[in-house]
Image (cartoon, rainbow, N blue to C red; front, side):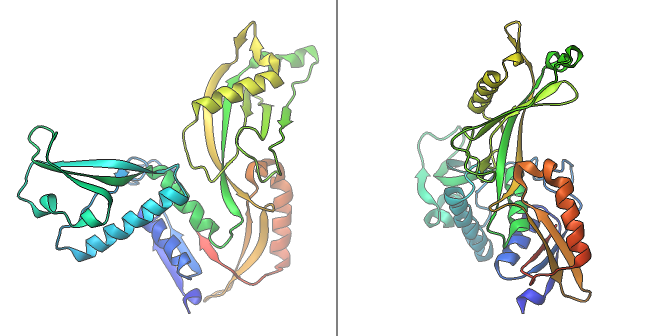
Length: 331
């Protein structure tokens, strides 16, 4: 049976993580990904953070295997862009130009019936170009897409798990910290809006805003929690709204008519789960019986829940109260 086979995937690049995810989708349960670098690593040996990626054919007109591969990739990426992860996969026009009009792949390309909106270009070509194509393609933000693959693999089988994208503004406001000397304690402020449904369904910037001081004189102003949003860049409009809302909550952020110095705009993904965190044991039966204890899905409340959750994790591990195995996805 597929579920009983142990499969090891070497590497957590695009191909490695796609392999692991597709194996899970095809019914293989015991998948181990062995890695040297993880998504987010910055190293010359780990290319995805640096590369640009778009769909553009590599197959020649007589290479059926590569044609099949490119066709599957085009359809899959288009589907992802339309239905699932438009924040890191975008649909856009492509223009390809060629100086040599004697090559069949340029004058009569095999993919003309695969892509959307294909047109041959003969006018308004760049200097020296003799032929060209235009068609609809996709752009892939590879660092963000790689993180999406990692999250999908780890969460496979748990449909309640999803990422939430948080955006905050970190400011320097040491004048607020100095209030301690005047026997006025620094404070944390939270404003929960009407669109805040539960702690696991926060909608955009209307859900909850907060002012959280740190011991180093900086203050975290937040925040957002957008479901299934993989955009790694801070949104300027959201930054402006966050500053406006948090200054209303804490007017002391403005001193002598001057706003606090901005240290950085921050964006991060949190694993969040409908119904709350998953803390449970799971058993893997192969040559050696192994027990895994899952603890994930805390969303933005992981820090405050960490000690209590870990106490329960250790209790579960010691008692070995084991449910029926559903999946083992390890990275």
